Length: 138
Image 1 (cartoon, rainbow, N blue to C red):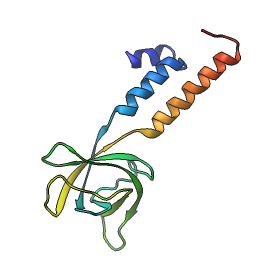
Image 2 (image 1 turned 90 degrees about the horizontal axis):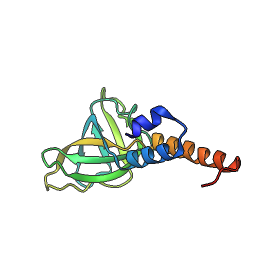
Image 3 (image 1 turned 180 degrees about the vertical axis):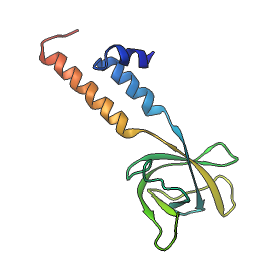
């Protein structure tokens, strides 16, 4: 229904606001996986995560086999390890505290699309200001 409302009127502030709310609570599964050690503030990935993960990106770490959120945090930065091919480190804002007590964990990563939410919010806010500036009120 929200996509149809956006299709009919892409500037409708109410539709943009509801769609932004929908995205705010939605976590998107990515194909990105990594490994983390208990107590570490970084994840090691064997594929380049820089297209998906940037500084400030909100992520959830899902411990494979548990299907439960092990950590919800933000990305500090993504760096390639010097001298190692195809190994990237994703530095986290908070340390990883696993659900299970083993040392090394394989993790799935879910991402929240915050830039798109911010864009929708700014467009919805602009639409509301435009309507009020024209003198239209409820």
